[in-house]
Image (cartoon, rainbow, N blue to C red; front, side, top):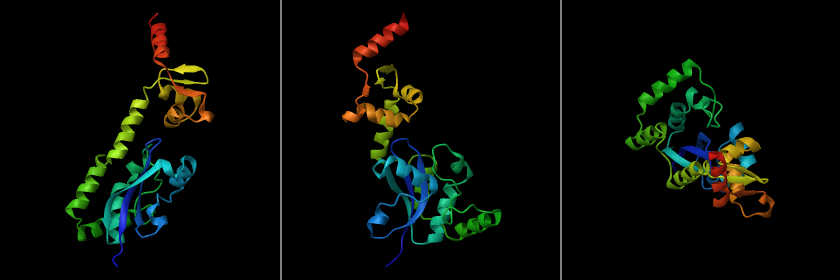
Length: 206
């Protein structure tokens, strides 16, 4: 049976941060639920819970070297330096930082094994930020809208959950989740009423 490796992206559905890696697919629960093994992504999964992460496949490969080569092409220094990623090392060879010699060898290897048109399209779209499942797109739209939602936390009115998050010292997504929750333990978090929003606007105009 042919072996398959995937280039995948794992996204934190709470804060939008992502992790890109390579994984060998197998018919096991562990493989199907695999989200990444880097230090930062592992810590984030422990903090937010597996249910708040989603893995999507960017490309499939029958050769491990090709998978690592594609990862190296995406997870470059600029990608690692971004604030919205969990990757801490350059891509390729399981997260090992490349020397210039290794980069040249990878470049030569890539030239000798051209990618399929489908793989090229997927990787190109990822680089342009255009590969986003509909479910994830909806969550992103909801998160963007949530930034402007007025909330009340511990009796204090905030014109947006983004401002509230900064003032209360927590992630905007976490605060908004609590504000919308019906759980008794989050009784001090709620969305502001129309009357409260109108009163705030009136006071601001006076």
